[in-house]
Image (cartoon, rainbow, N blue to C red; front, side, top):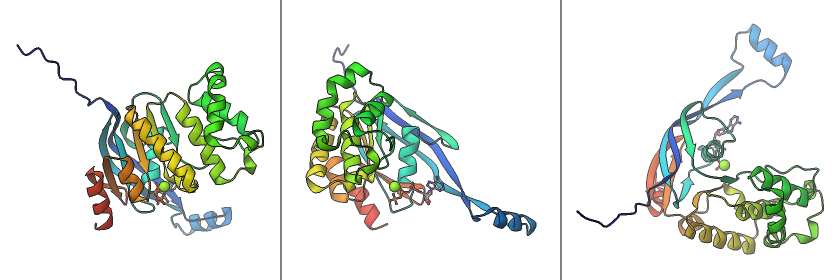
Length: 249
Ligand SMILES: Nc1ncnc2c1ncn2[C@@H]1O[C@H](COP(=O)(O)OP(=O)(O)OP(=O)(O)O)[C@@H](O)[C@H]1O
Ligand SMILES: [Mg+2]
C-alpha cells in the first residue's frame, strides 16, 4: 500500500451555486406619477436581472479577480458573498471570517470618530475589546491618519475612509478578504502598500476576491479571473486569459 499522503489544497472557501439576483427598477418618482401610472395601467417598475445563474467555487488560498464592465454585476456579486445582499435564487456558502471592503465609507458611522469606528468595525468583524486594544496602534499606524483619528469620520476624504477601513480589515484574523474597486481612491503610495499587504495575505493562505478595472494590478495580485458580462459568467480561468476575454469579447 502506498503510504504517502497526498495533501490536497482544494478546500473550498467560497461556493457560489446557481445564484440569481434581480432588482426592481422604478420608473416613477412621485406619488402622483405612481397614481397616474396605476390608472393608465402602466408599469411603475420592471425587474432587472443583475446576476444570472452564477456558479463557481473558490478554494482556500486562491486569489481571484472578478472582471467586467460597469454595471455587469461585480459589486452585486461581492455583496452577496459578503452577506450584505441575499440572492433570489441559488446559494452562497463561505467558510471562515469574511472581511469586505466594498464601498467607500460603508460600515462607518458618520457621527463617530475614526477611533470609535475602528472599535465598531473591528467588533462587527468579530474582535473583542482586548483584541482591538492590542492592535489599535498598528491599525492607526498602517492607515497613517493618526492626526485625524479623533475627528468625526463625516469629515474624512474618500482616501482617508479607505485607509482606515483597509487597515481594520487586515488587522482582524480574516479568512476571506473581498476588495471592491475602492482601492482606486487611495493615492499611489497607499495603493502600493495595500498591494504588498494583499500579496502577503495571499502568501499566508488567505482567500482573496478582488474587483478592479485596473488589469495590471489584477494580474499582479490574482492567478484566476472570472469575467462577468451583463450578469452572466462568460469566462473563468487564468487571469491573463480573463483580461484578454474582457478586452476582446
Ligand atoms: N440596489 C439596487 N437596486 C437596483 N439596481 C441595482 C442595485 N444594485 C445594483 N443594481 C444594478 O445592478 C447592475 C449591476 O450593478 P453592480 O454595481 O453590481 O455593477 P458593477 O459590475 O459593480 O459595475 P461598476 O464597474 O460600475 O462598479 C447595475 O445595472 C445596477 O444598476
Ligand atoms: Mg462596482
